[in-house]
Each structure stands twice: as structure tokens, then as C-alpha cells.
Image (cartoon, rainbow, N blue to C red; front, side, top):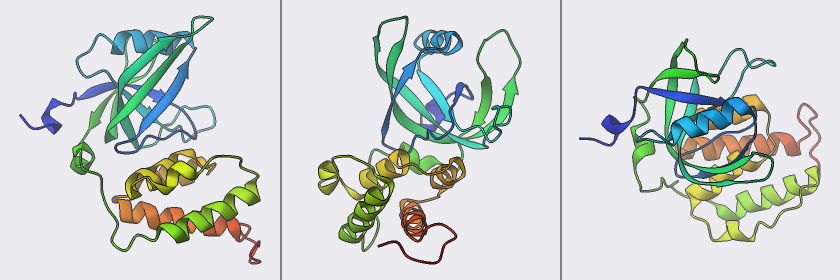
Length: 212
């Protein structure tokens, strides 16, 4: 049986604006709403232990993006006040299908996995001619502009996929920009888009003057 065949045709959804999960990354989440606490409890009883991370495209979350990424719960711990901390390990992106009606307090949908077979590989993608120094220099300027305080030293030793995907997940881009990064077909496409978003921000958005 192929790894794609092991994926279920339906998964619970966790809509969260500004949060994306990309291939071969992990996402920590703090769960506190009763409906999502119930979701985690239900998911832990399933063989796949998958949760579909997906962004709302409506301010009130009524409409969802058409592409999300499913992560497997690989760690969880109980916190105070009936909260949970979980860690999702990316499994594969998916296309949203029909959202099912039922008695669950959270949304559950049919999904399609076709087109994202590369996500299932354990081997990271690479980018030909990857210029780490140029990316790190642009990142440093962006961080100064936005007043971001972070230790980027670990990025120096990360492989190119881990670096590009982690920055795509962590940097404060808009919901639409995050979604575009998620939907990028390949790592090369995502790297090119990430470069463009950083440069656009450094130019002041619509302002043509470059911020030094």
C-alpha cells in the first residue's frame, strides 16, 4: 500500500488565520476552546491522528481556504485550566472537499490528497543555486524594519527546505500571503515568493522608496 493510500478521506479541521503548516515541519498549538479540546480527544482515538490546519478567508471564519495541510499529533501535554499543548508534524497538504454535517462541535470535511504526493516523502526538497547569504541578509533587514527580536543563529545550519518553510510559517505576513506560500507547488516557487514578499515589505509595500 502506498503512503498516499494510508491517508483518510475525511479529517477534522482547525481553522486558524495566519497559521500554516508546511511539508516536513512541526507546529506547536495551545488548545483551549471546548470544541477543539473535544477534537483532540477524538483525533487521538484514530489511527492517523490527523488534524487539518486551514485558514479562514472570511473575517468570521465562515468560508475556508481551498488548500490546507494536515498534521499528525506527535506530542501533547496537559496544561493548567484544562488546556492542552500539542505538536503537529506535517503529513500532506490537501484540497478541501465537502464539509460534513453532524453532531461534532468542530468542522469535519472530506479532503483530496492528489497533487501533493511530494509532501509524503521523507527527503527534503532542494533549490538549485540556493543563495542562503542573500536570504539571510534580506531577513535581517526585514527583522530590523519590523522590530522582530529573535535568534536566527539556528537558521544558519538549517537545510534550505527547513529554512524556507520555517520562515514562511513564522514571519508576520498577511493571511493571503501565508496562503500563497502554502500553495506554492515547489520549494523553488516558495523561495521565490518568500524573497518577493520580503523585498516588497522592505520597499514599504506600495511605497517605491527602499527602506535602508
